[in-house]
Image 1: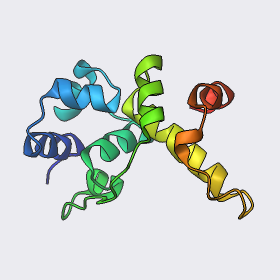
Image 2: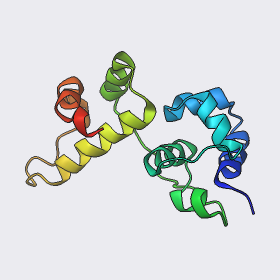
Image 3: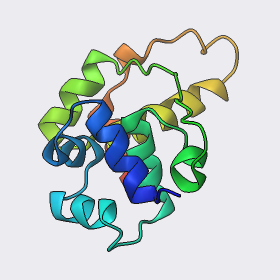
Length: 134
């Protein structure tokens, strides 16, 4: 039975990505990824979730195996967030977390404010207010 690391390697190769590419997208070091793929390191749930998101696989599949389950949920990162994340040096996972947090806040607002777009968000100000939770 394949290990978590082997499933990560298999998906990375299926996507035609190098270890450098996946490491950068997931916000981890290439050395850590190499050790993980070779079964030399364990991984936290948060890090594994970030890797699963980048690889478009379910966390359940990465942990247990079975039939590959893609999340098949395309994420549209607003241009303003992408620009801020690049300027601030945020990883893909951190940018997704910011996006998720902002969406949750909007979802809990009154129905009159739900129509707001994410392009109008001051991402720098939002990041400063929530960075302790990232």
